[in-house]
Image 1 (cartoon, helix red, strand yellow):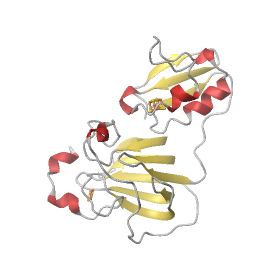
Image 2 (cartoon, rainbow, N blue to C red):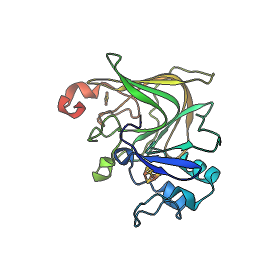
Image 3 (cartoon, rainbow, N blue to C red):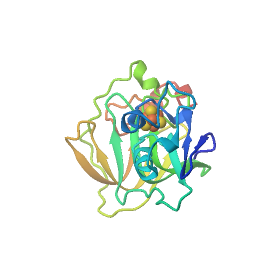
Image 4 (cartoon, rainbow, N blue to C red):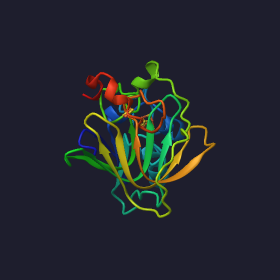
Length: 216
Ligand code: SF4
Ligand code: FES
């Protein structure tokens, strides 16, 4: 899912950066400021750190804007055994796992280990978050008391992005509230992507009564 990425090659590792997926969370800048310096050109200099340390910081980018490719036979990124969906307060859904995204008709969107999905309905890069939620989306990121399909095993996640409706997430995952006060094992769930549900993060059908342009 990185066809729009720019490569920053080093001796032992290549960092790939997709600006459209970056929401300036700055985990990279905080983690390795010698490598990631937004004031410098190029802003990513992979040889300014140990390749293993750099790979670890790249893996903390929650949106999947950053990826790496090892040139030195170092270990590649592995998805976590247990997939998770973390709700961000006033922000997106952060997915971490072996994730495949597709449209309702089966057209592939791509696969990744880290993805930030828009849940305010206003991103210009749907289904991915582009940071537009900062302009006023308001939701504490708690889990509405709605029954979910339980699951116990680990495995990959499939996300079907509804043309005019929610994300249908299938596969075992841990759903985490923004304040980490609640975690719930789910087998599948329909998660709101229009921002209008009163049962967030779940879809409650409110999308049927809002402007369908929001899904474009
Ligand atoms: S950690 Fe990822 S999303 Fe955050 S600023 Fe760096 S590249 Fe952007
Ligand atoms: S997608 Fe938001 S209520 Fe269904």
